Amino acid sequence: MSSPESFFVPQGPRFVATELTRGPWSPDHQHGGPSSALLARAIERLPSDGPVFQVARMTVEFLRPIPIAEFELRTEIVRSGKKTRIVTAWLETSGKRIVQATGLCIRRADVPVPAVPVPAVEPPIPSPEESAVFQFPFFMDSVGYHTAMEGRLARGVYGQGPTSMWMRMRVPVVPGETPSPVQRVMAAADSGNGVSVVLDVFKYTFINPDLTVYLHRPMEGEWVCLDAATIPESKGVGLADTRLHDSRGPIGRSVQSLILERRPGG
Image 1 (cartoon, rainbow, N blue to C red):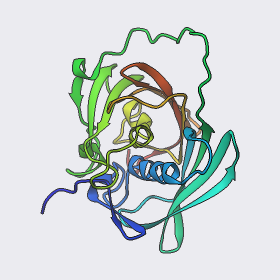
Image 2: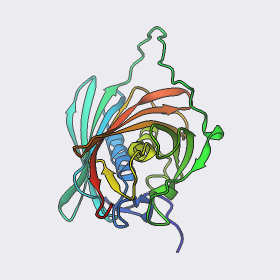
Image 3: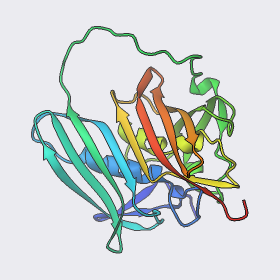
Image 4: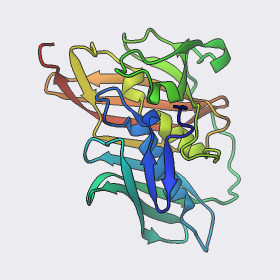
């Protein structure tokens, strides 16, 4: 059987998840990145009869574990103004809403501003070409999100704290369609907690029930860098805090709440 060519396959108004969406925690459930990218695609594609809008913030809430299944995708425009637009999109299956996203979009306009210093990252992050090839080691299956995404370890020691990782999609969200900059960011950003692992993955789980991404400019190119750090706390709650970069510099930030649990027997 040939390998899938995308994360999802459209079937009329519905979308079927392929095995490339498979995540690390269960062979039957998705990584959050592909569905986040599919919802971003839906938010971007909603027509506007006014100004051109840019996604400035996207918050994704994972209401249930996302099965590798067939979904209905629905959207709703919550507010449509001249300067901002708020849109929700969600995936449901068997009548249950599984994952939902809210996009805050800001109108694009020519507003000349003076040059301001951009906070420097010290030491500078090596480029993808200068970074070591990497694949996430804790996925249980041979095919999944970890094989659909290409990784390059730019800085840090994996599993030992703050880490910088370049990531890019090997396959599109849907067949034959070049991913947009927002789709590329959302597909990767849900890996902030996986990039900055600080707990033994065979003893703990650190699943994120949400993801919020802020973008101050569109990503350029195919590679997005996750400059990530995880902060675990002994009361079972943690945070993954990630600075997002492309080859030109900072593009935004993402954060994930973490549910920390000890594995049985761990």
